[in-house]
Image (cartoon, rainbow, N blue to C red; front, side, top):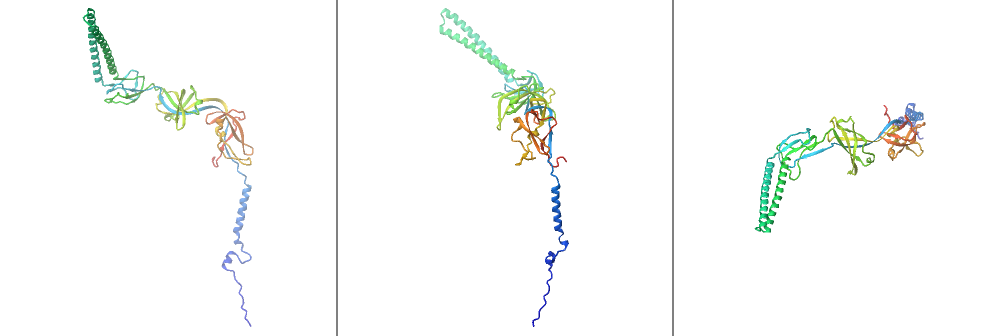
Length: 402
């Protein structure tokens, strides 16, 4: 007889109990996270379906009736109308400097003196040479007269008479040369007084008392004198793309850094044909006349000028941003509101598009013809734009209005 050993029923292990395996039903508190996930997904789906799509917001600008001035902008430098460099024509030590910076001078006024000791000595020597030449001429004339009388009596040959005649002619030439040398010496003596050639103001003084100047090879510069500074010239460089619009007589305004908040008036006085090329940029020089009665403008100041090339008054205009806005289209012909730059400048071509917001919130285009622009607004010459109409300038950035 075999004894049967009783088999003990297996008990769930700790792992099975933890995972809920081996039991027919896990406790409810072990499945709560599954329910939470299901509820969260349902809430997100409901919010996504029920929340309406946010409309695109645009930055808009209005059409306005305005006066448009077409401008050409150029930069340049203020200069006196006349600016003369005064030098010395004779060499020597500077004994006196009679004017300084900003002094007003008159034409012919002595402004410096060069030492005249050597120049006076040369003048005396030249005068003595003239006197000597005059004596030689008198002797030669007497010799010629005597030779003529003796020839008539047959005591002097023809060759002797010719010799006396030649001596007289040489004496005449010598005295002419001596007189010229004397005139030059006196002129040099007079040039020792440096005089102002014009009425004006001393811009620069480049010499000191006691300094020696040498005028042997080139004229040394002593002073720079400008004419009346109540009138100036503004020399500007005009781009070749704009030179066709600029004409003599056009009005202009300009600003300088010293008075950034103030605008000064000017007028186009001259357009020069010589071209200047710097870094492949071609410019032409223009000259504007400037009134400077109050004396605030100084020679050498850098100025930015705006030349008025055309003016139209009381015309319908739109902001330039409205002409540069272009929405990006998709394959389904719906518009994705993304602002891009138009491939062709509509202002330069004279034709463009403006965009309004339609009833469905999508951009709607309108073709327009264009006229004069001032860089900020452009004239609309077609009759399909009315004052106070709003046009899209750009896409509003999120939070931009907060």
